[in-house]
Image 1 (tube, one colour):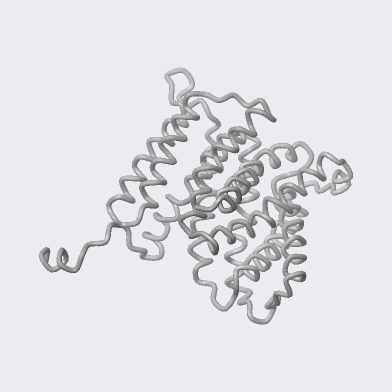
Image 2 (image 1 turned 135 degrees about the vertical axis):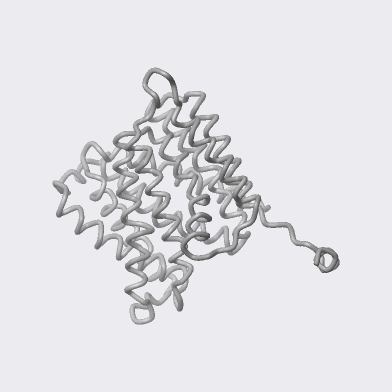
Length: 300
């Protein structure tokens, strides 16, 4: 791996890890749906400027808007809002670790709803990760669990949304990665904006605060705009396997940001749960070993 690709991977993990910090900082002044709306809006502006500079067509006519809308709401607007709500009850570090279970739920959703083939190692990996989830709950005889159950379940629900959304995104046809990102953020902005103005008190004048504006810019421009470009750069110049390595780094960087910037405590259960969950993700993401033609013939 070249130094540039390694540097890009580290930068991407720092950006996405910091997203949980940005959300936590915005929650005192904005509701979860409003944060999702602002994040989508700033991300949309970013990808639009990039596409204009690179002279990439937006593809309004080529985009299948109904499938795009369903995918964008399930894969972006709804989970972003749920994550915001969960962080009102969980630390940003805990939220980031639970978010790392997304690849596991993607396999389960693919197998159950989309008939995707699985193999034994993936199910073993999911079992290992499940042990990590139990450890994160920090079960004890006094309060049964030491984390907020609603916040915990909400983060799992958000990762399930990502899992379904990722399966739906594979079925979008006739659009490139820039058009997919543009369409996703456009629908997410409209959907989360409508929800925000219906269910939350929206006060956009609070963006006048340099602190809030900086957090939104970090979350939208970098976390939702630049990060997509870096991710797809890793896919194209490196490999999909290299790009997905960010899954292992984001929780670590989020814990780092949460500890240094929010003074969040790092308990043994947090680190132990992280090890088991990432170990499970590693097992499920390993490719199934390919048997030789001779081996297959002998087994028949």
